Structures are given as structure tokens and as C-alpha cells.
Image (cartoon, rainbow, N blue to C red; front, side):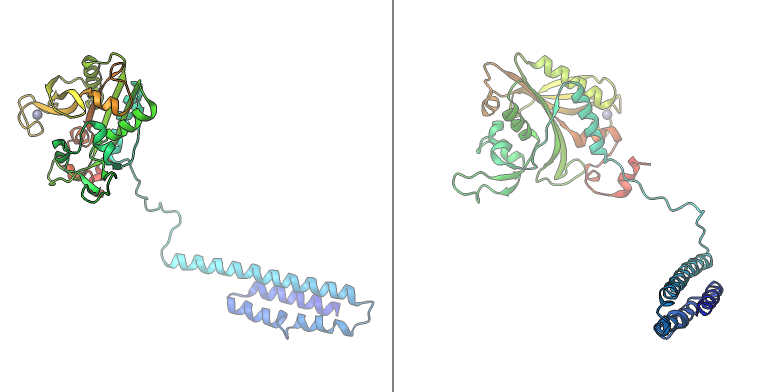
Length: 349
Ligand SMILES: [Zn+2]
């Protein structure tokens, strides 16, 4: 029986090595290891042997069986690899060719400008604040000296989540914030004075859309509250900011401007960086309206529990979307939120 086992082993291994296909291997497996296979029948006949011979021959038979099973599995893997290689070659596949490049992502131009400005403000000692885009009426308007009957509330063309005629008695309305100023109220209430904070973010208004008006756009507003702060401090900060934004000093001028949350209020204009005698960007005036600002209204300080007798402050707003358009020469604000890949890819060649 030992001879028979060894013969089956050597013949079996040779047959497995010569098998050229999966079907051949399957036949060999059945012939040797199947229910009526040759190894199986040897194992079955072990019972007829004298008891003394059974353990050794039994062990040998099991080793032969296991060896053949492993050889079958190894040959099967080899055949599958060969078959796959042949198939790939028939397809003309060449694993050494370079692959298709994956398109890379990039930072949106609005975020890029916002990050640049955040760096600039941080270097000037400001902290960056964030706040909710769905905001309470009180924070978006009342705390900023814009009471319920104030005309500025209508001029903001607010998108209401809970409109005034639907809020219950004693309850507040909820709006999509119309400016980032409520973030400053939140910051001042939370941290108190003195404070230097800048709030970049997305704001919403009900607008008729055209090349310069979009329902969703970006602002960055700054607030400084401290003892003895006045207009010269504000001018210095605004000029530094313009230099940082445009990459060089521009001539600026102040005009009076009206905003309920500042007194006095200003509009800061900068000389058009694109022309000397007028162009489309500056509407032929050679000046660009860049930044509203002013000294914080005492009512706003009081609404934030800051004593206007002790502290004063200045605030300024920056149309982030507008700055992005100026920096990159974009002529229609609607591109910014369009999600158009052909537009965005121009910023990431
Ligand atoms: Zn111009």
C-alpha cells in the first residue's frame, strides 16, 4: 500500500503540472481526491490493514492527500494568472504606459482672497470670527441700530426664514443674514471690549440679478473697539487693507455715507487701479467705491453691553466678492457662485 500511495503521489503531481486548463485540473481532482477517487479509496481501505500498520500508513495517506490538494490549488492560481495575462495582452493592455491623469481640485477664488485677507488681518492683531448664516432678526438688525420701522431694513431686501407676519407674539423673526455684522455683535457680546475682530462670510439678499448683483455673495467686515479709537485709526486700517488687497498703495478719499450702525459713517473710495482717465470698472469716474465704514454707533456698543463712555470703535465692510472681481478682472458677479467648472479651472491651470 505504501508503494501504491507513492505511485499515486508522483503520478498525480506530474499530471497537475502538465494540466493546461481549469477543466483538466478539475478532472484530476475528481480522479484522485473525489468521493470515489483513488486516494479516497486508499484511505477507506486503511481499516482492512493490521492495526500496527494503520497509524503510519494513515499519516502517509493524509500527507499525500494534502500535498496533492495544495499542488492543485497552486497550479490553479498559476493558470488563472496566465489566462489573465493572455487576456490583457489580447486587449493591447500595457501596464508600463502612464495612466490617465486625475483632475486635481483647487481653492475657490473667493476662498483664496478670503484666506489672504485673513492672514493680513491676523498679522494686524485681529481675530477671525465665524457665525451662523441663518440668523436671528435681533442680531441681524436690532442690535445694529436698525429697529423694526427703520427704512434700512427694507433696503436690505431680506430673505426671511420666518417672516415678520408669521412670527408669534414676543417671538423673533429668522433671516438669512443680510451682512456679516451680526457676527461682530456675537463676538463683542462674547469677548467684550477691547476687541479686534474680522468676520468673513456668505450673505444673502433678495436681489434682481445682473452683472453686479447676486442673491448670494461674500463680505468681510472688521470691528475694532478700544479706548480712544477714532477716525485716523480707521483710515490707517482701511489704507493698509487696500494695499494688502491690491498689492500696492492706492490713492483714497473719504465721502460721508449713511449706515445705521455707525456715526459718523463714510464711504472710502480708491483710485481705479485699471485706468488713468476712466474705464468700465470705475464707470468712467476713476474712483472705485471700495469700503463703507465709520465709528461704531453708541447704540450698537450698548446693545453689546459695552459702555460708550469708556470705549469707542470703528467698523468697516469689504465686499469680498467685489474684491475678487477686481483682483482677477471678472466682469460678472454671477460667475462666482455659478459652480461652473470651466470658470473655476481658469484659477488652477
Ligand atoms: Zn477705471
